[in-house]
Length: 430
Image 1 (cartoon, rainbow, N blue to C red):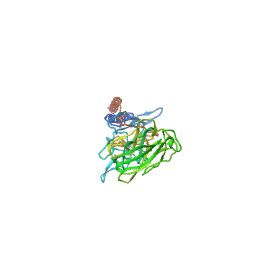
Image 2 (cartoon, one colour):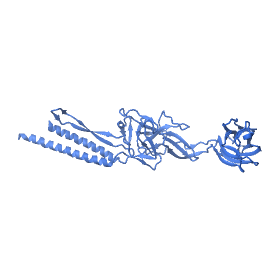
Image 3 (tube, helix red, strand yellow):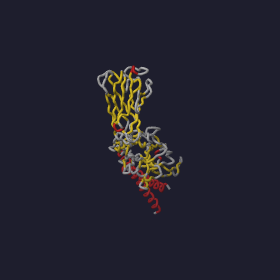
Image 4 (cartoon, rainbow, N blue to C red):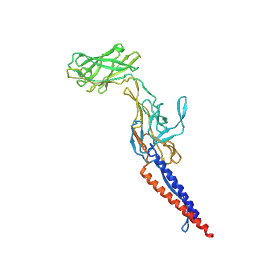
């Protein structure tokens, strides 16, 4: 019994070492595969009989020992859309299974990966080198993500609609001793994104009082006038040189009510051919030395002028931010957040089911998938413009290879010795 048992045990050792060699071979072959996680070998013994007086040969089985939680080296990439996770977690991805009506359709199952070598495909999807589509939370108009569902991220909003000017900011100093009118040209955008000329003309009319006229050739010329009172000219009086109130408005101009510290602004409307467009001219605050002031000086001093209108924009590029936001950049200087890349974590990620293309699926043993923002609730930080290399150490694998080879050879010696001893036993009757 012991001779046959010894041979059977040695054969199980050969099988176990062959499996270990297979794990090593797989690791070495994928040492340069992005996001690959190596497989170590865990040898488990099985006993036939073992007591204080008797021990009979058993067997050994080689089981895979997965290293899904071990971080690979994060390496900078020339691809700005490449992503890596510094810490725990996986990207949520989808697997395409065909097309319908010219649109890509996806497998209903959920897949996960650490392979973050994503690039835009011809349909605008972010796809990694293994063909998996990156999923994320879609964002609303304000850029806030909808965390209730995951969808493949697609860059399809290639035009940024124009935004009509609604606010003008002006910071300037009118000379207290000035006697001549001064003007400030400014460009605004209408609702179609067309640039329209506008002029603000300041004319001194009395002590500490200037009359503002706003004109726009594209809206029919003068839009109206309004008196701007400074310091002692206002009722009640405010610190010298600061705006105290508005009076005698004409046309579409109207000033805000005077209250110390409140914003001082003039609202007006202009029709550039698409109906009335309401614009607010912000001049600072009542009684505060900011925005528009009237202090000593020989000339009109313009410090700042700006407006919030935006022309029509065309697609320029797409970027992923450190918080996971996917933003489309346009050639008008604007950007729109269309989605956010979340990170999914598991209680036992080593128990995930492995699939082709460095992908995984959830199992009962891995626990539920928890999807969260990067760098929160135990999820790793997102590293943009980087990839995670395989966690295989070639030197370590070669060491394992030597050990496996020697162990395999030793087991063959046991088989040979058992065979010779059995032959001797058979020859005893001669």
